[in-house]
Image (tube, rainbow, N blue to C red):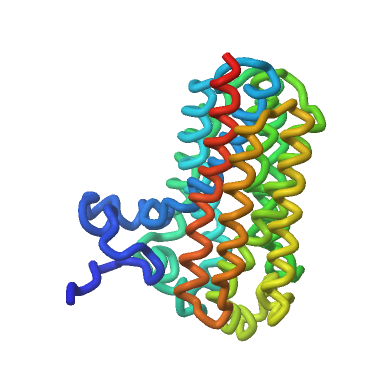
Length: 310
């Protein structure tokens, strides 16, 4: 059996590229940005990509590849910045939780000062991406700063930190439309609402990995709040997400390919619910990660719908 790489994080993907191929001096910072666990960047990116594709469906043009590229870079940079900021705020709590005490800050791989400098560098990259967008999209993006700043503190004051994550990670559902049309309409608002409830659902599954430690430390989560009712509640959240995506497609004038993408998304969510076992942390992590594929299915349907209309 291969020994773990020194400094590796407990819940990182085994034999990931950061632990095996990144320069040793970079590894603590890449771990801080969760580059060893890229699924979070995908989950931040998909609502942005959905919005770009939905705007293309509504406008009768091809999905804007420049906007997609910008949102891809922005998702990686801002997810890394968000994780770095979250770890700075939570470093004392993380030191008390089995899954997180091996992270760079609580394990001493990175100092708080160095993490703050790294955070500033990632924010500058995100700012450069934002400033490359049209003016109205810049304004919409700037409005996300407050919920992002508040997110790490929510677990201390509410059982619903996943709801604030839904606001933050779902913000991209507004951005693609704003960049394409210079305004917001009912369709992207419905898409944002869909992303919001989808994110609460999948992050509740994720939070079941930490529920015992969270209870001991005294922080809140929907995993603790829902408890044994998690399966029906997450099923309801996923069903609401599918319904709201359907509303967004209808408002945008989408065709059968968009609805086919929605059907794939809904089927994937149903598969997650069928497999869910909240007493199995490894399975919870697997199901959480699989939402990358759920997001891809919806994007594929929307993008193909836009392209075939040209």
